Length: 265
Image: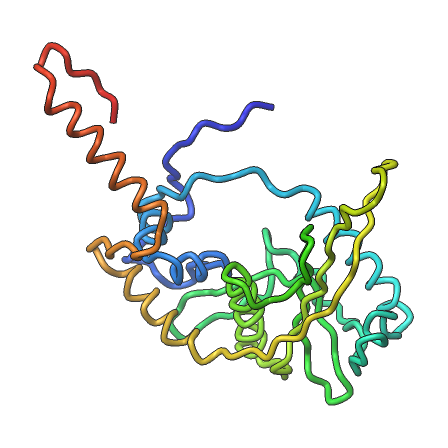
Protein backbone atom coordinates (compact mmCIF):
# COMPACT_ATOMS: atom_id res chain seq x y z
CA UNK A 1 0.00 0.00 0.00
CA UNK A 2 1.49 3.37 -0.99
CA UNK A 3 1.94 5.99 1.72
CA UNK A 4 -0.80 8.54 2.20
CA UNK A 5 -0.07 11.97 0.80
CA UNK A 6 0.45 14.65 3.40
CA UNK A 7 -2.68 16.72 3.97
CA UNK A 8 -3.85 19.29 6.46
CA UNK A 9 -6.03 17.76 9.16
CA UNK A 10 -9.51 19.19 9.68
CA UNK A 11 -10.71 17.03 12.58
CA UNK A 12 -9.74 16.83 16.27
CA UNK A 13 -8.58 20.44 16.35
CA UNK A 14 -8.81 22.58 19.46
CA UNK A 15 -11.56 25.20 19.38
CA UNK A 16 -10.93 28.04 21.87
CA UNK A 17 -14.66 28.75 22.02
CA UNK A 18 -15.42 25.18 23.17
CA UNK A 19 -12.42 24.00 25.22
CA UNK A 20 -14.25 21.69 27.65
CA UNK A 21 -13.47 18.01 27.18
CA UNK A 22 -10.76 18.40 24.54
CA UNK A 23 -8.51 15.34 24.68
CA UNK A 24 -4.74 15.72 24.83
CA UNK A 25 -2.71 12.53 24.52
CA UNK A 26 0.50 11.71 26.34
CA UNK A 27 2.42 12.08 23.07
CA UNK A 28 0.95 15.57 22.53
CA UNK A 29 2.11 16.61 26.02
CA UNK A 30 5.58 15.43 25.06
CA UNK A 31 5.32 17.24 21.72
CA UNK A 32 4.57 20.49 23.57
CA UNK A 33 7.57 19.80 25.81
CA UNK A 34 9.75 19.34 22.71
CA UNK A 35 8.44 22.30 20.70
CA UNK A 36 5.42 24.53 21.45
CA UNK A 37 5.29 25.66 17.80
CA UNK A 38 5.04 22.12 16.44
CA UNK A 39 2.34 21.42 19.03
CA UNK A 40 0.38 24.52 18.01
CA UNK A 41 0.66 23.75 14.30
CA UNK A 42 -0.65 20.26 14.99
CA UNK A 43 -3.42 20.78 17.54
CA UNK A 44 -4.68 24.24 16.57
CA UNK A 45 -3.97 24.40 12.83
CA UNK A 46 -4.06 20.74 11.78
CA UNK A 47 -0.51 20.71 10.40
CA UNK A 48 1.27 17.87 12.21
CA UNK A 49 4.85 16.78 11.77
CA UNK A 50 5.28 14.27 8.92
CA UNK A 51 4.52 10.75 10.11
CA UNK A 52 6.78 7.73 9.83
CA UNK A 53 5.99 4.01 9.50
CA UNK A 54 5.49 2.23 12.81
CA UNK A 55 8.27 0.03 14.14
CA UNK A 56 6.32 -3.17 13.67
CA UNK A 57 9.03 -5.40 15.18
CA UNK A 58 8.83 -3.34 18.37
CA UNK A 59 5.05 -3.71 18.33
CA UNK A 60 5.42 -7.48 18.05
CA UNK A 61 7.78 -7.54 21.03
CA UNK A 62 5.30 -5.45 23.04
CA UNK A 63 2.45 -7.81 22.23
CA UNK A 64 4.46 -10.91 23.17
CA UNK A 65 5.61 -9.38 26.44
CA UNK A 66 2.02 -8.48 27.31
CA UNK A 67 0.90 -12.06 26.67
CA UNK A 68 3.74 -13.40 28.79
CA UNK A 69 2.99 -11.13 31.75
CA UNK A 70 -0.75 -11.75 31.31
CA UNK A 71 -0.17 -15.48 31.85
CA UNK A 72 1.33 -14.74 35.27
CA UNK A 73 -1.34 -12.11 35.94
CA UNK A 74 -4.03 -14.77 35.55
CA UNK A 75 -2.27 -16.90 38.19
CA UNK A 76 -1.75 -13.97 40.57
CA UNK A 77 1.98 -14.60 40.65
CA UNK A 78 5.10 -12.57 39.79
CA UNK A 79 6.90 -13.07 36.51
CA UNK A 80 10.29 -14.83 36.95
CA UNK A 81 12.00 -11.62 35.82
CA UNK A 82 10.36 -9.77 38.70
CA UNK A 83 11.73 -12.39 41.07
CA UNK A 84 15.17 -12.20 39.46
CA UNK A 85 15.30 -8.44 40.07
CA UNK A 86 13.77 -8.81 43.56
CA UNK A 87 10.72 -6.70 42.72
CA UNK A 88 8.08 -7.27 45.40
CA UNK A 89 5.02 -6.98 43.20
CA UNK A 90 2.68 -8.90 40.90
CA UNK A 91 1.07 -7.91 37.59
CA UNK A 92 -2.11 -5.98 38.37
CA UNK A 93 -5.39 -7.81 37.81
CA UNK A 94 -8.04 -5.13 37.26
CA UNK A 95 -10.99 -4.93 34.88
CA UNK A 96 -9.86 -1.44 33.83
CA UNK A 97 -6.46 -2.59 32.59
CA UNK A 98 -7.56 -3.33 29.02
CA UNK A 99 -8.96 0.20 28.70
CA UNK A 100 -5.84 1.69 30.28
CA UNK A 101 -3.73 -0.13 27.70
CA UNK A 102 -5.82 1.05 24.74
CA UNK A 103 -3.89 4.16 23.70
CA UNK A 104 -5.96 4.80 20.57
CA UNK A 105 -9.49 4.66 21.99
CA UNK A 106 -9.18 5.11 25.73
CA UNK A 107 -6.06 4.87 27.91
CA UNK A 108 -5.88 6.34 31.40
CA UNK A 109 -8.11 9.43 31.14
CA UNK A 110 -7.72 12.29 33.60
CA UNK A 111 -10.34 15.06 33.44
CA UNK A 112 -8.11 17.91 34.54
CA UNK A 113 -9.45 20.96 36.45
CA UNK A 114 -8.62 23.03 33.35
CA UNK A 115 -11.37 21.20 31.47
CA UNK A 116 -8.92 19.34 29.26
CA UNK A 117 -8.85 15.55 29.31
CA UNK A 118 -5.32 14.17 29.37
CA UNK A 119 -4.86 10.54 28.45
CA UNK A 120 -2.24 7.90 27.75
CA UNK A 121 -2.06 4.15 27.16
CA UNK A 122 0.23 2.17 29.46
CA UNK A 123 2.04 -1.04 28.53
CA UNK A 124 1.51 -2.65 31.92
CA UNK A 125 0.75 -2.00 35.58
CA UNK A 126 2.09 -3.97 38.53
CA UNK A 127 0.99 -3.64 42.14
CA UNK A 128 3.09 -3.94 45.30
CA UNK A 129 2.00 -5.21 48.77
CA UNK A 130 1.25 -1.62 49.83
CA UNK A 131 -1.40 -1.41 47.11
CA UNK A 132 0.62 1.07 45.04
CA UNK A 133 0.32 0.84 41.27
CA UNK A 134 3.64 0.55 39.45
CA UNK A 135 3.93 1.91 35.91
CA UNK A 136 5.73 -0.46 33.54
CA UNK A 137 6.88 0.28 30.01
CA UNK A 138 8.27 -2.16 27.45
CA UNK A 139 11.21 -1.09 25.30
CA UNK A 140 13.01 -2.91 22.49
CA UNK A 141 16.38 -2.15 20.95
CA UNK A 142 19.47 -3.80 19.50
CA UNK A 143 22.83 -2.47 20.59
CA UNK A 144 26.24 -3.84 21.51
CA UNK A 145 26.67 -1.77 24.66
CA UNK A 146 24.85 -2.22 27.94
CA UNK A 147 21.27 -0.99 27.96
CA UNK A 148 20.68 2.08 30.16
CA UNK A 149 18.13 4.87 30.49
CA UNK A 150 20.74 7.59 30.87
CA UNK A 151 21.14 8.65 27.22
CA UNK A 152 19.62 11.66 25.49
CA UNK A 153 16.76 9.79 23.83
CA UNK A 154 15.97 7.87 27.02
CA UNK A 155 15.03 11.12 28.77
CA UNK A 156 11.84 10.99 26.72
CA UNK A 157 11.18 7.48 28.05
CA UNK A 158 11.43 8.82 31.60
CA UNK A 159 8.99 11.62 30.82
CA UNK A 160 6.65 9.04 29.35
CA UNK A 161 6.35 6.95 32.53
CA UNK A 162 6.19 10.08 34.68
CA UNK A 163 3.17 11.29 32.70
CA UNK A 164 1.53 7.90 33.26
CA UNK A 165 2.20 8.23 37.00
CA UNK A 166 0.65 11.70 36.94
CA UNK A 167 -2.41 10.48 35.02
CA UNK A 168 -3.03 7.61 37.44
CA UNK A 169 -2.71 9.89 40.45
CA UNK A 170 -5.06 12.31 38.72
CA UNK A 171 -7.82 9.68 38.69
CA UNK A 172 -7.26 8.98 42.37
CA UNK A 173 -4.98 5.95 42.26
CA UNK A 174 -2.20 5.30 44.76
CA UNK A 175 0.97 5.17 42.65
CA UNK A 176 4.54 4.16 43.44
CA UNK A 177 7.29 6.67 42.67
CA UNK A 178 9.25 3.80 41.11
CA UNK A 179 8.50 2.82 37.52
CA UNK A 180 10.14 0.00 35.58
CA UNK A 181 11.33 -0.48 32.02
CA UNK A 182 11.32 -4.04 30.72
CA UNK A 183 14.07 -3.58 28.16
CA UNK A 184 14.73 -6.24 25.52
CA UNK A 185 17.97 -6.03 23.55
CA UNK A 186 18.26 -7.98 20.31
CA UNK A 187 21.36 -10.16 20.19
CA UNK A 188 23.24 -9.68 16.90
CA UNK A 189 26.20 -11.89 17.90
CA UNK A 190 24.64 -15.17 16.81
CA UNK A 191 26.40 -17.11 14.04
CA UNK A 192 23.27 -17.18 11.88
CA UNK A 193 19.75 -15.81 11.81
CA UNK A 194 17.98 -19.20 11.47
CA UNK A 195 14.60 -17.44 11.35
CA UNK A 196 14.79 -16.35 14.97
CA UNK A 197 16.02 -13.37 16.95
CA UNK A 198 17.17 -13.80 20.54
CA UNK A 199 16.92 -11.07 23.16
CA UNK A 200 18.54 -10.25 26.45
CA UNK A 201 15.91 -8.93 28.85
CA UNK A 202 16.71 -6.36 31.54
CA UNK A 203 14.49 -4.56 34.03
CA UNK A 204 15.56 -0.99 34.81
CA UNK A 205 14.06 1.07 37.63
CA UNK A 206 13.35 4.79 37.45
CA UNK A 207 12.21 7.01 40.31
CA UNK A 208 9.72 9.34 38.71
CA UNK A 209 9.32 13.03 39.39
CA UNK A 210 6.06 14.64 38.27
CA UNK A 211 6.56 18.18 39.59
CA UNK A 212 7.35 19.46 36.09
CA UNK A 213 4.04 18.31 34.59
CA UNK A 214 1.48 20.70 36.13
CA UNK A 215 3.45 23.84 35.16
CA UNK A 216 3.87 22.40 31.67
CA UNK A 217 0.18 21.61 31.15
CA UNK A 218 -0.71 25.10 32.41
CA UNK A 219 1.50 26.54 29.65
CA UNK A 220 -0.01 24.05 27.21
CA UNK A 221 -3.51 25.26 28.07
CA UNK A 222 -2.54 28.90 27.55
CA UNK A 223 -0.93 27.98 24.23
CA UNK A 224 -4.16 26.33 23.05
CA UNK A 225 -6.17 29.44 23.89
CA UNK A 226 -3.75 31.84 22.22
CA UNK A 227 -4.18 33.22 18.71
CA UNK A 228 -0.45 33.86 18.50
CA UNK A 229 1.82 31.13 17.15
CA UNK A 230 4.47 30.33 19.78
CA UNK A 231 8.19 30.46 19.15
CA UNK A 232 9.97 27.35 17.95
CA UNK A 233 12.17 25.42 20.34
CA UNK A 234 15.86 26.11 19.72
CA UNK A 235 16.63 22.42 19.17
CA UNK A 236 13.61 21.59 16.96
CA UNK A 237 14.86 20.09 13.69
CA UNK A 238 11.40 20.29 12.12
CA UNK A 239 11.14 24.05 12.65
CA UNK A 240 14.72 24.55 11.50
CA UNK A 241 13.97 22.58 8.34
CA UNK A 242 10.82 24.61 7.62
CA UNK A 243 12.67 27.88 8.18
CA UNK A 244 15.72 27.03 6.08
CA UNK A 245 13.74 25.41 3.24
CA UNK A 246 11.20 28.25 3.19
CA UNK A 247 13.88 30.94 2.99
CA UNK A 248 15.74 29.07 0.26
CA UNK A 249 12.64 28.58 -1.87
CA UNK A 250 11.45 32.15 -1.39
CA UNK A 251 14.90 33.41 -2.36
CA UNK A 252 14.83 31.38 -5.56
CA UNK A 253 11.38 32.73 -6.44
CA UNK A 254 12.45 36.34 -5.87
CA UNK A 255 15.54 35.91 -8.04
CA UNK A 256 13.46 34.92 -11.08
CA UNK A 257 11.49 37.13 -13.41
CA UNK A 258 7.67 36.88 -13.26
CA UNK A 259 7.68 34.72 -16.40
CA UNK A 260 10.11 32.24 -14.81
CA UNK A 261 8.38 31.89 -11.47
CA UNK A 262 6.87 28.51 -10.67
CA UNK A 263 5.18 27.59 -7.42
CA UNK A 264 7.89 25.60 -5.67
CA UNK A 265 6.87 26.37 -2.11
